[in-house]
Length: 175
Image 1: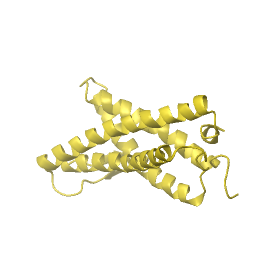
Image 2 (image 1 turned 135 degrees about the horizontal axis):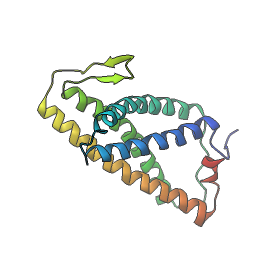
Image 3 (image 1 turned 45 degrees about the vertical axis):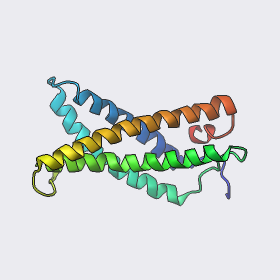
Image 4 (image 1 turned 120 degrees about the vertical axis):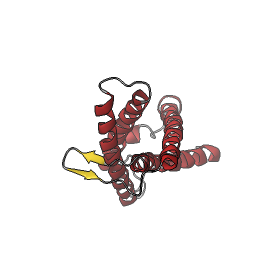
């Protein structure tokens, strides 16, 4: 099929599964910086574990993306909107890589490893460093804000295509 009308099932599963994972990770991250309640430590541990899974998932998602042709953007879409779509998509992927990597480097700089459900621990790389920890924590936070803004843009564009333009773009990811 040269120009598919919808994304393949595997792409839709990756898209919606990662959307749920990223949304929950962002909520957990926001809650972790707001409180030191009794549930804080288990949320931090789960956040680290799921961050590693998110990195594995984005690698698998990108590999899957190269296996299939995506539906084309509507032919009558203005060039500026096509460019915005490509830039936003690239930035979303950059953030999906940067978030777990900066998180792992932050944890490493603190001298801790990441417990993977008690099966094994990912050891820290390098020596503990307060400067490194501070840098990667700030990078992690800035990337989280950028990711949230990009998600708002992505959802807004999807709603625009689904409700206003009524083209096939939103449906191609929903079916």
